[in-house]
Every structure is written in C-alpha cells, then in structure tokens.
Image 1: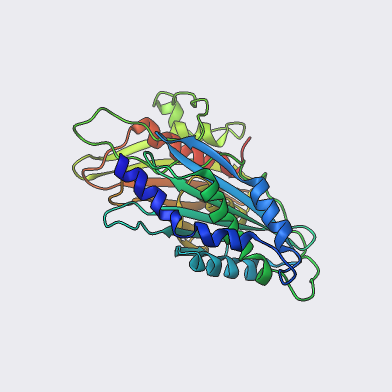
Image 2: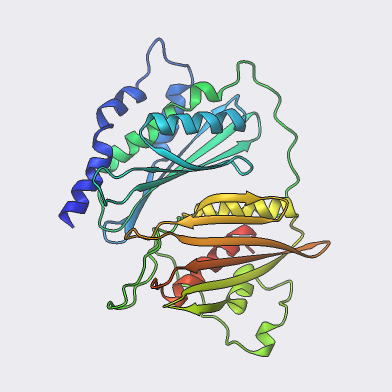
Length: 345
C-alpha cells in the first residue's frame, strides 16, 4: 500500500513546479487566461476516499470560441502536460487520456475531457481525473495540474473575431443528469469475498430488480423509467470460465437517433468509460474501462435500434473476460445507470 501511495504521488510531482508558472498572469498573458484559471480553481471538487478511490473534477468556460478548435487545443495541452491521448470522439466532444505510471507495472491515471458548446459563442470544458483505491496525492497538486491544462486551452480556443453562435439544435429530451462518475470497476478475485463496484460518492441503492416473469419480459409502458425497464430486462450470459456478458435495454420515446447517440456517449463518459469508437450509421458505441487493480479491460457496447418512428431502443452490453468476476448486482447498477442518465424521468 505504501508503494502505491508513493507511486501515485510521483505521477504528478514532476509537473508541480511548472504548474504554478502555467497559472500565473502578467502583461504578456492573454486577457482571458486569468478568468479561465479562476473558474478552474473555483470549480475544483473532490469526491470519494483513499479506500474507495477518488475523483477530481473542474471546469471552465471559454468565450468567443468554437468547439472544434477547443477540442484540438485540449488534446495538445494534455500532451504538453505529460498525458497520452488514447481516444478522441469529435462527434460528441470527448477526449480520453491517461497519465502513464512512472514505475513498470504501476497503474495509469485516467483523465477524461468533455467539450460542450453553450449559447453566446461560449464553450465549456470539463475535466475529470480518477485515482483508484489505495492511491493518494495532495489535492492542491491535482488542482494545479488540471488548471494548468485548462490554461493551455484558452489562448487557441478563442477566435480572432468572434463568430455568431450556431443555431440551437432541437432538444429531444432532458440532458443526462449530472452526477459523480463511478470509480474504475474492480475485479473479484476467485478466492476472496465478493466485492462491490466503488462509486465516488455514496448514493442510495436502486430498488431490487423485479422477478423474472413472463409479464416482466413484456414491453414496458411509456410511464416506466429507463432504469426500471433496464432492471426488468437485465440478463446475465456466460460463465466465470468462459467470460460473462450482462445486458440491459430501455425504450426512449421522442428521442431522435442523433440525440440518443450523443446522450449515450456522454452518459458513458460521465460513468468513467472511455469511448473508443462511434459508428453513427450503424448506431453503435464501443467503450472500455480499466479495472481498479489493472489487468484486462472491461468492454461495453451500446446499440441503438428504432422501435417505431417516434421510439428508439438503446441496448447496453457489458462484458468481462474469462476468469474475471464482478457481482451481478453491481453490473446491473452500472448498466442501468448509463441508461438512466440518458433521459431521466
């Protein structure tokens, strides 16, 4: 445990000195750098604990900007600050990156970025950094690290001459509800007691799934929530020796295909999944997540299927490899949590 703690501290130590310089302003600094830096520092938050894992978040809004150059400059700022970009989803404004572990065999530190266009020619940049259980670094170091990344985005994110904001897109449903992202998933060891997924902020447990009956398998009414539909349709396939797949689905009325794909990608990112591929034509999204203790990645696939001209079904499939085990109830909560955030009741 002591070694993990020291490794976690070492991940960010190399950039602490430089981070202070990145946050300073002076006569030659861009006029908006100071406000952006102040937004980042004021919006910084921490959730979770040393034993369960910790999630750090912050955000800033950049005026007179467009999402595309902000997304590109974000990727450059991440690289300049020692992170490795592993995936960019331009359609949904998402970037996934990691800060490589300094010691061989150590765990990488995942960081995700969401770039969101706002009214009035503004762009909001949200950063989320996650530390697994048993890892700890000083909060102020993480804040300086994230805010140094944000400070490197603003100059190139602004337009030389602000352009009129694009016409607002049709809102098909309420956006995914904001909430703490779950910490990386944890694999159960065969010779240990069952463990549960760790969440960054304890939340009331969802109601237990309905008994599997013929009636439960029938299509749900429109009044049924997405989470309720998912829990009723949730199934488990496979075995510990061959690998396990968990499935859940929900129908969304009045949600266009484009909006459904966009909201699904954002819901996955909010839950700590790294979106690796999006096929708009096929209506599919692929994502991965690193287990808490390292090892093989978990995989998740989301598929959109039109039910009728006004309804789209979203199916989530979460898979673990052979000899990997997680509690069934925790897998259900994670799958159904993704669907619940797409269009909360």
